[in-house]
Each structure stands twice: as structure tokens, then as C-alpha cells.
Image (cartoon, rainbow, N blue to C red; front, side, top):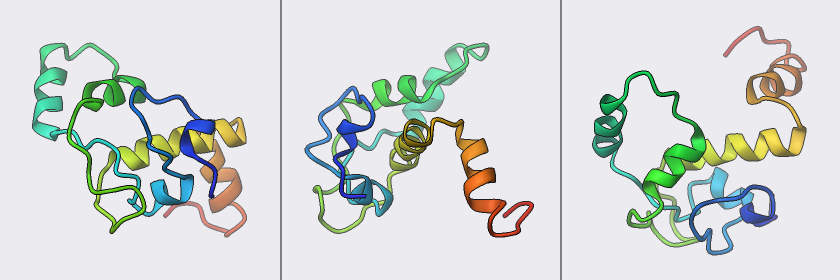
Length: 111
């Protein structure tokens, strides 16, 4: 959890040393894009399949949400990057990792 995010995944912006723990607790200070701006871009090409990399690229110059390690600021980008971290560390797609490593052992079919 205390590994810097950039040691696990490549980002199109400087993570400023944010760790996986700070990512999970919304203390990463990653750029926070405007969902309205992203919606406009998506509407321009409805046949396009957006990747997490595309989303990260679209917000790389956006203002930061707080300071690294400071008070938590909700930023959905944290969840997107966290999914990449989980996939990289487990070597499994996120859905498979969640099913096999979380839901299954807990005896859950869904949550």
C-alpha cells in the first residue's frame, strides 16, 4: 500500500509520489477533470470505446484535487487508476480479481 503509484502503473501526469494507499483514500491529489468536459468529448464520437488511459490523458492538465497526503478529496480518477493497479499486481482483469479474491472468499455472489 505504501508503494508509489508510478512504480506500478504509467500515468500521463506526475503522481508527485502518491502511494497506492493515498490513491485508495482519495489523498493522491491527482488532477480532477470536469465530467461535463468529458461528456462533451464522448458525445463527439459515440462509437469510440474510451479507455482509462484516454480518460487520464484528457485530465492530465486539470487542476489538482488537494495535496498529496492531505485531507481526502473525492476524485473518481483515483478509482480508475486503482483498477489499473489491481490489474497490474494481480495479472487479472479487475472483474476477475474482484470475483476470485474478494467476492468468492467472502461467500458473496454480488455486492
